[in-house]
Image 1 (cartoon, rainbow, N blue to C red):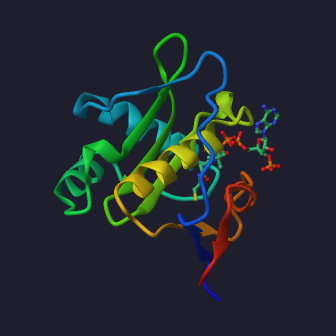
Image 2 (cartoon, rainbow, N blue to C red):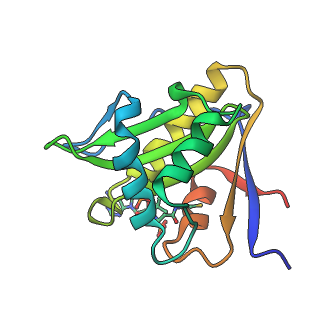
Length: 154
Ligand SMILES: CC(C)(COP(=O)(O)OP(=O)(O)OC[C@H]1O[C@@H](n2cnc3c(N)ncnc32)[C@H](O)[C@@H]1OP(=O)(O)O)[C@@H](O)C(=O)NCCC(=O)NCCS
């Protein structure tokens, strides 16, 4: 059996607008943010749920990927300006990484970022958004995705 499952959000079903917890805001992405995004992603996956290569290898592969689009890197900053959460998507309507800093979990940032990604892809004309999640994700990601209207497809 595969250690992960693919999940899908049908965009024909209306997507609620994101609700950002107080003190957190969606912020524009810049290439200069990549080291902080990498650090957050590596720390977020440290107990499982995913993996990320060392920074240089990761950055080169990311920027060279034909599915990379800077408009699909969603960043949430806290009141002090630090990056608290990221959602990195491929242009093929696929969520590559969703990571919330451990100190900012269970506030609704994960769900808000999912909605942001769904609405962005719906505006681009996509029919659905997919992702893969490990069956034993230690942070309850599968439950979050189910609550956000995603269903397991394979
Ligand atoms: C999975 C992950 C992204 C979820 O992020 P999050 O911001 O904590 O997600 P949310 O706050 O939207 O929802 C998580 C839980 O908080 C609860 N919650 C949401 N808002 C809440 C609030 N205001 N008060 C209390 N609890 C709340 C939700 O009910 C949900 O609980 P449930 O899973 O029992 O249903 C985060 O735990 C993470 O970064 N994990 C490590 C990386 C990872 O594995 N990513 C997924 C890869 S596929």
